[in-house]
Length: 314
Image (cartoon, rainbow, N blue to C red):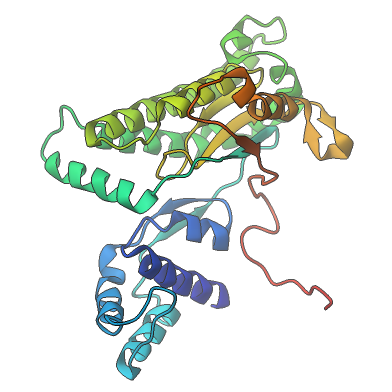
């Protein structure tokens, strides 16, 4: 119950600070760890947020005050003792052993709330258009990726292959995997599964870019496209792209883990990616992506997922 209350209260605070009900995936991931996420309905918080706003018309944005009635409403929604208010869906997910996730902080930044508002306004205009609707195509692509990660990528035979051969794949660019002498017989089916994932990530990027262009929002701006493409051309890399609402904030990469180095704190494929990112500005003068900082975060798996209690001994 404690974790649920932390999640619910954090979502309320986050939505109030943003001035809208966003997807909430970042809060959910911080609390519950790696998972497949389906957001809660806007109606869960719409009335509460309106009541908070009405109570703080003359207040600054650093904090808010609430009446006794709003405080009671806030407590009720936060605790949700009968599990009848929140309808978000969280399905635990871990990357298979042999695959790694790396993130980069792209020192540019974007105004995510205003970007999201423009995209939603554009989406509303296309609700009845099934022909030229990248939003619906993106949804279908994401559902295919979800099915792949919860299905074929979890099969025991695939997991066994990947754990044994990830370091071999990490030495070759993805477009050459099928030509490698190390990929034979049944192994070709497993490599084909990874290439299927790569194709779906590329399709997702295509739809996101189309949405951005249609809504006049830089979801995957040109500088990020160049960086993601260059990253995907490196040995071992399955996919790279712009996470979240897009823009210049960050980049992710999914790759086959290479030979461990630095006492297991890194691996050879990860180092190659880091070298490209750290030298991006000097290799690409004039790019609108000037500083790319690799981050130490990893996709959580097994124990220690999400938020937990720790005794610091202070």
